[in-house]
Structures are given as structure tokens and as C-alpha cells.
Image 1: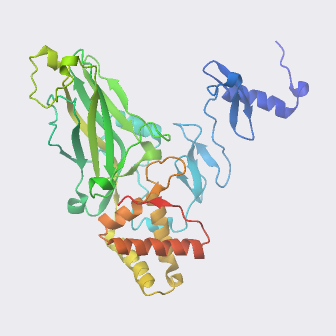
Image 2: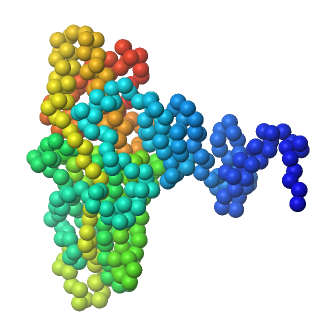
Image 3: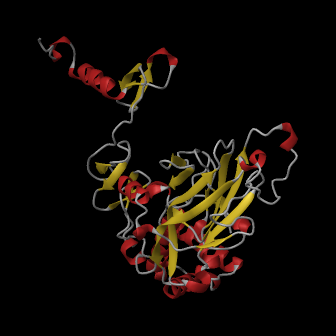
Amino acid sequence: MGVVGPGNGTIQEWLTRVQSLLYCNENGFWGTFLESQRSCVCHGGTSLCQRPIPCIIGGNNSCAMCSLANISLCGSCNKGYKLYRGRCEPQNVDSERSEQFISFETDLDFQDLELKYLLQKMDSRLYVHTTFISNEIRLDTFFDPRWRKRMSLTLKSNKNRMDFIHMVIGISMRICQMRNSSLDPMFFVYVNPFSGSHSEGWNMPFGEYGYPRWEKIRLQNSQCYNWTLLLGNRWKTFFETVHIYLRSRTRLPSLLRNETGQGPVDLSDPSKRQFYIKISDVQVYGYSLRFNADLLRSAVQQVNQSYTQGGQFYSSSSVMLLLLDIRDRINRLAPPVAPGKPQLDLFSCMLKHRLKLTNSEIIRVNHALDLYNTEILKQSDQMTAKLC
């Protein structure tokens, strides 16, 4: 069998054929790879032919290595650049100083494949010891979930763990249902990043904007299921309290549609037993970051003082650069939003709940940082939406 060489076409044509074969041959569909757009044009008017296209490896802001979990995203970056949700961006010169205030870098920054393996093994290094609170659910006890149930996992760091802020990278629950159950549990999760009221939390957008969904695995020889949500490095975020709301979809007989689901559980009644479930375990996975509130408060007060006195911030440029870096690194861990919508402002939540700043102080600090960023650094500000 002979091999036809490039003599029958240009090098670029042969490269396009090879790339099309590698990246545009999925789900039984074919397409043509466009190098300029790094995407496939699928034949037949479909968009299902494209496979994951590897990241670009090279110098500067290109990837040093592609992610093992998703080859289309960066897994590590070149010196002077930091990894942010699958891409490499310039490392601020003050990032090392930022570590004295908040220990963003940690030994628990695993690759996503490692994180998934550790979560499956329920590795104790990733346990975050939270307090379970619910007036409507008791763990390991059957209940009727046909009406909304609420439970919370909280840390109460403002009282007990002042020197830490906390990161969530996953959630797991073990849910047991009665045999032949027609229930389909649905979970809605709200996150308070740094404490505060329920309105100062945000809703996890499962399956939207690249956000993950719950994974459900049935345990062997059991009516129980492990529900796991893996946020990983891309969607890890700060949390103080996680609120979990349970609703259930079910095909109810007409006689039971008006029942409230709030009555006593009767496991001996076959007509009702099929609607009962129990949650035997619920766990937040993540880790804690050292947080020097006094040092950070001192830096914020310097900015606040120079702003209220109407003075120049140029003399405190190192403090401004430091706080800009901290603000940027905190807000980068905000949840995804719809295209064109501003990102949530987690930095102001941290100032309010962990440094106990007033609203007017928070406004002054952010305004001073914005002015320095635009007038001195000549950089555009990223719009944010108020959360706290």
C-alpha cells in the first residue's frame, strides 16, 4: 500500500485535511477545519462534528501545557503568567505580596482529574467541616420531599475562624429512595461567599455558561445514589454558607396532587411510601485560605484616608497595586454570568463582612482603586454588579 505525498496538493491543503480528520470527525458527522478560526465547518448544516481542539502551546501568554481534563484549555502557564479558567493571563508583580494578606496559592490546587479522583475517594484533605442546619430535614431520616425543603451548611467563620476564608470545589450528597419511587429530586444551591443575608448570595447556574451539573451514581445493591457536583479549578469560589433547596418532580395520582407533603411519614402505607426519601450525608469539599484581616484592613485604611483627604494616591502606589491585585483575584472567582452581564462584586462582600467596613467606606475604596486603574495605569475597569 503506497502513501500519497504532498506532491498532490500544497502543504497547507494536506495540513487542513489532517486537522479535519483529527478535529472534525465526531458523532458520525464530518467537517472541514479552519485554522484561522480554530473551529470546524460541519457538512450537512450541523454543528456536531467538532471534537475538542487542543490549546495553543508556546511562549508568553500561550499555554505551557494543555489541561489533562480538557485538552482545549490550558493546564499550566509560562513564567510571568497565571492560569485563569483555562487561559493564561499576565501575572501581576504584586501577586507574591498578596499572599501575605490572603494565601491564594495552596498545596491543594490539584488538576481537575486529580480533584475528581479525590472527591470520588472522599479524601479527607478536601473536607470542610461545616455545621448542618435545617428546620425541615433530619439527616438519615425519611421525609416527604414533594414540597420545598431547605438545608444549610455553614462555617460561622466570623465567630470561629477569623483567620481563614474558604473555598468550595465540590458538593456531595447521598440520597436514598424507596423502591419503585417515582420521585425525581431537584436541587437549587445558593452561596453566601462571606456570610451576610440570604439576598447576598448567588444561585449556582447548573448547566449554563459552561457551569457543571450534578452527577448521579447509583450505589451497588442499594436504593441510594451519590450526587456529586464538581466545580473544579474553573468554577471554585468562596463560600461561608451553602443553602440547598430540594424540590421533587413526580407523576402524582390525581387524588394526591393536593396533598401538602408535610404530614407525618408513614412507611407502612405503600401508597405514600414511594414518595419518601432520606439524605444520609451531605458534604462540602474545598479548603481554607489564610486570611490576615488586620494587615488587609491597614492597607484599605491607607487608601481610604488618602481618598478622604483629597490627596494624591501616587505616594501609596504599592498599596494601590496590591489592592487592585487582591480585588482582581477575588472577583475572578465570581460565578459565570450571561454574555454582556457584569460580573458579581465579591470583593465588596469581603470588605463588608470580613473587614466590617461601612457602605460609604466600601464605595470610597472602590472609587479610589478605579481612579488609579484608569488614570495612572491607563487600564479599563471591568464593570461589576453589586451583591452585598
